[in-house]
Image 1 (cartoon, rainbow, N blue to C red):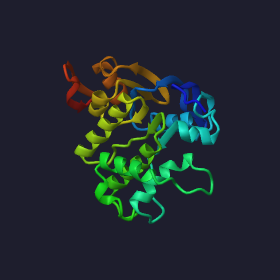
Image 2 (image 1 turned 120 degrees about the vertical axis):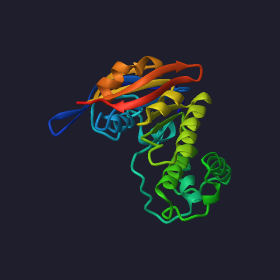
Image 3 (image 1 turned 90 degrees about the vertical axis):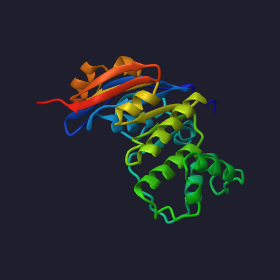
Image 4 (image 1 turned 135 degrees about the horizontal axis):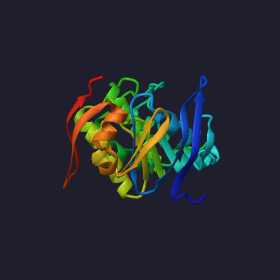
Length: 256
């Protein structure tokens, strides 16, 4: 199947317990761009990712969700927010499972998968964990191992739900830089992120959700204005556009 150049979501809405968790959200994710999905807790970010991937019953259309499951797994890798590893298998074997969408049922993984796994483990500073039991890792290590499994899928698109949450600062930067680099190489990345500074630094475009609605979309310097920061996140900040990108400083909570 020819791989698509974009994922399109049109009018996605999700209702739970009589209220909208997501309301009429539309956007397009192109290959070659890293897009940050931001908003306060409960804004609908995870719901939107799940709806786009076809894991959430919803109104509207997603070009990704419309694909058969086997084609969907070759088109996009989905990294959920939950970080549970149920089987005590070596990290190397767990990461290699990312190649299953390309293997016929009952067949063995091809030998060249080992090289792919080694490359991704190197990128995520996990080479020393290759033979370790995957259920004996810290929270941050588990997060990076599950990200490695998604990257080994080598899909045109990656949908990642808070991949940097719980990581130490160095690995937060490394993970977001990796997504930025993957986009430069032609993948389309949609990543939820609570760190606005990281989102502004590594994402070319931001989508802002509030109460299940899309309230802003565009480059960070156009989206992250003092007005939006106050209305959406209830914070104040000094916003500066520098040669290195957008800089947020002196952030504080707004008084009620």
